[in-house]
Each structure stands twice: as C-alpha cells, then as structure tokens.
Length: 409
Image 1 (cartoon, rainbow, N blue to C red):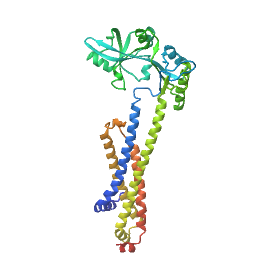
Image 2 (image 1 turned 90 degrees about the vertical axis):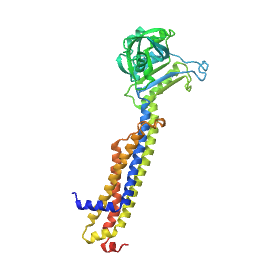
Image 3 (image 1 turned 135 degrees about the vertical axis):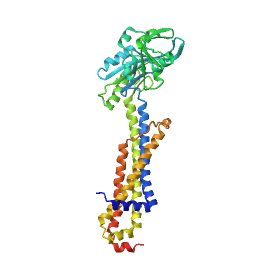
Image 4 (image 1 turned 90 degrees about the horizontal axis):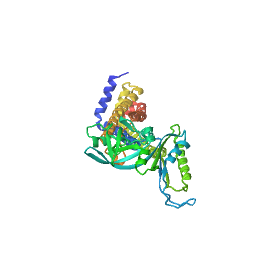
C-alpha cells in the first residue's frame, strides 16, 4: 500500500544527500548506458553482415570456373575450365530434389541507345530462375521467361536506373532499345535491393546472348539455390559434393583450388555467425561486468549511507519503528534510485545509438539498434540486484540497538 509519509521521508533523505544519490544513480546509469551501446554495436555488425545478402537468396550457391593450377590425369596445368549448357543441365538433372532454382550467367556489356540518350551498361544473360536467386522485384512488365530461352528472343529486362538514364520521364516498357547496333524489346523494368550497380544492369536470355555474341554455348557461372529443407550442415556438404563432382567431371585435381570454385552462403553464414557469437559473448561479459560494478557501487554507497544515518535510525527505533519498516524504507530508496537511473541510462543509450546511425558504416557497423525488451530485462535484473545490495546493509541497520546507535559518532 502507498505510504505517503514514508515516500516523503525518502525524498527528503535524497534531497539532503544529493552527492550520495548522484553517485548511486551514476553507477547504475553508466552500467546500463555502456551495456546498451555495446549491444547496439553488436547488432550493427550483424546488420552489416545481413546487408551483404540483401539482394540474394540466403540459400544460394555460386559455382565458378577458373584455370587449373596443377597437372592431373594427363592434363597440363593452366588449363581453362569452360562451363557449357550441358553442365547447367547436368546440375538440374543430377541434383533433382536438392536444387530449388538454377540459373547460368553469361557476362557482357554494351552501348545502349534510345533516341539521343546513350550509355555503357553491364549485360547479364540469365535463366528465368535468376529472378528468385537475386530477389529481383518487377516494377513493370515481366521477367525473362522460358519462351525467351527456347526462342532466343531479343527481349530484355532493364534496371530501374537504366530506365531513368535513357528514357528520362518516359516509360520504357514496350520500347525498343538498341544495344551495340542490335534492337531489343523491353519487356520489363526491375528494381533490386543491391543498390545502384544492380539497378543499372540489363538482363536477357542466356541463349540469346550465346547466339548473338559468338554463336556458342559457353557459360561464365552457374548459380543455384538449395532446398530449404536442408540444414546448414547439409547445405555445406551439398556444396562440397558439387565441387567434388565438377572436379571429377572436368578432370581437375581434388586439391586444386582455382579451377572449380563453389561458394555457399550457408558456409559464409555459419562462419560469420560463429564470429558474431564470439563478439556477443564478449559484449555480454563486458556488459554484465559493468552492471555488476553498478550493483557493487550501489551496495557500497548504501552501506555508507546507512552508516551515516546510524543515529537517525536509532532514534526511529527508539520511537517505535519496527526493523521491517526500516528495511523497507532503505530498500525503497535503493529501488527508486536504481529504477530512475537505469531508465535514464537506457534512454541515453538509445539516443546515442540513433545519433551514431550509419556514421560507422566504414567500420562495418550498420544501423546499430537494440531490442528494448533485452535492455529493460537487464535494467530489471540490475534493480533486483540493487535491491539485494541494499538489503544487506538495511538488515544490519535494522538489527542495531537504539542505545548503540545513539552513541555513534
């Protein structure tokens, strides 16, 4: 029940001991402040890591070809490995059920012209599945489809910034765009979370690119996404199996690291999460250490406070105050100071993180934020331990005899 007289005494005691109250609150506020900022920085590192995958499916596997670094089974070193359409078909057939989406890539570039506007753009020749591997968002029209692949259609899909550069205020959908002297019809305009570079790309069917630029069936890269039913360990093992199979297919030494390169996001995520896990452990150890220091500080200051008020407490007992009421008074003061200071530390920490924003992006700290629930939990824990820290000296004070207390100097 709310005891107005007791709270008046508490506020009066706080007002008479401003320095003690400030020091008590400062240790608590500083602990919560440091804990909030450290946790926010940790989350900023996590956000920076996740941003690198924002425009790609997180279950993607990249398969690159290169040049052999050693001789193997009668083949000389420095042999160029060239993927072809049959290798793409091999993946779809050989790993049926394990592969969700699959798309080759053929890279190129060209000068695109529309009326008086022109510009040099990267061209990426792909399969329709590429839309899901890259998380491409269609703004207008459609993406490359199977008919484009089969018919080797001269249809293209352009990025949002290509439309902005070349068509200004016009809508590009349905228009004819000339690339290196060849006319293409724009069937779609897309946007991508990957940023400006991704939105200044031109996509076309890989079969069209092969026909028009070399009349071959060469591929530069093959990307797939594995079945999401796989665990992280299974996905990593699957990527290793692909690498092993392709090395056998192209007669590449098992320990040759440059001829066939397979990279899985699952492995990247696992390695990064281990590092981030270690960082979080360090953050929590430092943060908890800071909170413990705050608790110890409260305990020490409350002990000093009670010692300073020995005569006062003795008079209270002589006038009939019960040990329970004395303990309650001391604990209420401790909880009040801890709660207010903890809240101020929390608010200050969140404000500092908002102030930092993306200014530390070059240090891989992006949008540092904290889960308010976690910090509130830490504050409540601190209040609880502050309660315990105040209880020990309060109990000792409640046990002191009035006559002894009144003799205290």
